[in-house]
Length: 342
Ligand SMILES: [Zn+2]
Image (tube, rainbow, N blue to C red; front, side, top):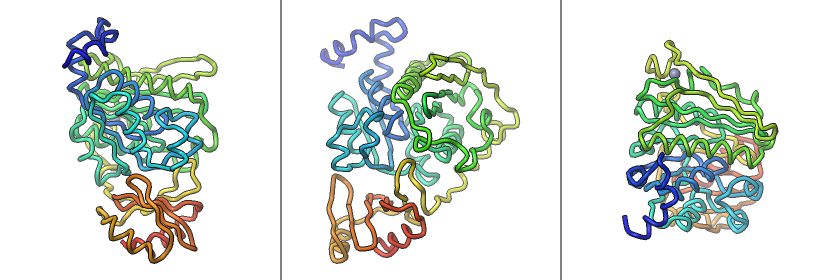
């Protein structure tokens, strides 16, 4: 650690909870943040400033104007150019702290790739916007015995719970045995979200992460809940369920599904994500030449944008595409198949 970095963290090292040893531990740590949006942006900024040595992130989506009120890593120029969140987040985090390593991928975290993505992480942080991914995180982290921190925010309310497999703590499925049925829960689209509620919950996640990385995790596992607007805060102790299919019986149903659904409607978007039927790494140059014969093609950063008479889409290097201006999954799949053909 050079003299610049020592002075940079001076006000943090002076804390008895951290100290010079703690700072060294943070510098040697790897955190994986699943999602670069609202929760993920706050978490990543706090951890980058705190000097966590390696931040890994994944996000499948693009920056849009309606993200800016709560997704603090993004600015107007990112929304105007509609870049991937992964790319915009990495750029901003490197400006904040050039001494750490930032690895940010524009991918969907799925049963196919989650285990390899999290392989190096000391802890995984939930910054997703859907239960399908959270149950997958739970399976993978229990299987790999890695700590992770669940969180969710909707409206003015948020909640946080750490999952600590090494301490035999309860997991997400001990708390909520199965994901809620699609369409039964409010979303950011239907209920809105207060930016300060995101800040409070992400700050708690980052604090729990730092404590776990320093080897001083919370002694009791609680589900912490806050209504930021009413200033009401409470926590409920969560017990391990001895019949829990995941942490007690070792059944990883969400990971073992290995089946990635063909399409996903994206939260807050008039868009459908289409997944390739098998893992693929696209030859972007060849694809670009092919698409230029069929419509208009442009690039921003690591993406290809394609527009034809019957629709438009943004194509990622991992073969995914986001078909915009539709919620019709069948139409999106047809459009994808016609032009990407995989
Ligand atoms: Zn469990």
